[in-house]
Amino acid sequence: MKNKAVFLDRDGVLNKERGEYTYKSRDFEWVPDSANALKILSDNGFLLIIISNQGGISKKIYNKSDVMNIEKSITEPLEEEGIRILDSYYCPHHSAIEKCLCRKPKSLLLERAMAKYNIDPDQSFFIGDSVRDIVAGQRVGIKGVLMQQNDSLLLAVKDILNE
Image 1 (cartoon, rainbow, N blue to C red):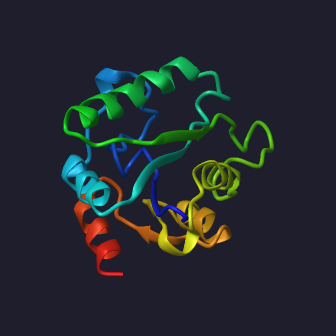
Image 2: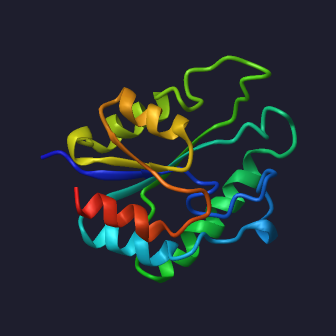
């Protein structure tokens, strides 16, 4: 049996988009209702996977360990609430510097996650705050839920559950 999943963009969806790169834990701030929304998704049988572009690595503004530290800022408090982010995939490239197959709106990161976790695209969703998130999902047959940047994640969850 295949799994259903919700793929989540990071900046602007889980943590507040600040208009500059968020790579220090002290700059991390949750989008409203994130834990409640993720708990609802998890309780409804969705695997939770983060897919994000992290072009600041390519620009040498921050490094992979900074990304890992932010991931801990996300996963550790959620685990205390009984919510598990199954995995996190990020593209370290920036289109102004190099070409790649993983930077959204391309779909390589989604393809990897779908293969690894046996995910059914027909039962899965991608929540993003940018058209590039939605396009990446569409490329692999996943329905997109476009939310307003930094808005309550519960609104997107309601759209998914009403689908």
